[in-house]
Length: 155
Image (cartoon, rainbow, N blue to C red; front, side):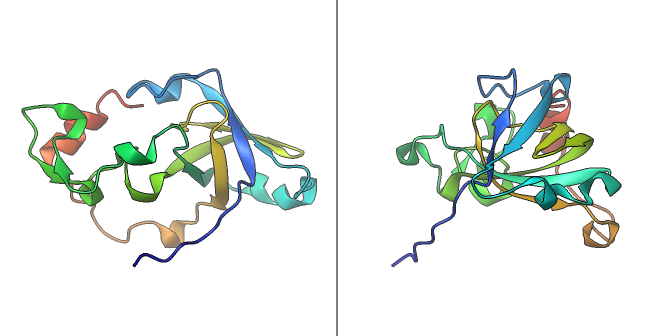
């Protein structure tokens, strides 16, 4: 039996992107608005010294009944191999959790402006972490050709 955990949103994405399209995520600057009932501006203190953050969010628009638990062809592309959900970054994943490294554009009080966030408007944000060099891969990153093709127009 699976254990259950409860998490709460720390804030929400504010973006002109209202639909989860698969490409051109870099074309928009989004912001993360903290829940001011939980946090004040001190929660963002020092974040402006970093150039990137990792944003952890919930794919809340994905119906739990649509979650993928096995293998599928990424984006339904017949030219790409069937690949397990844990070898993809698809949004219809168990627990519906997304994670993206974004460039910090500005920090303004309880609002963080970022570039490269692939989440739509009103998406619940679960956490924000600064990206530190010591936590990045310490060697070459290997990936299959289909993954490079998929990412060609993503940003």
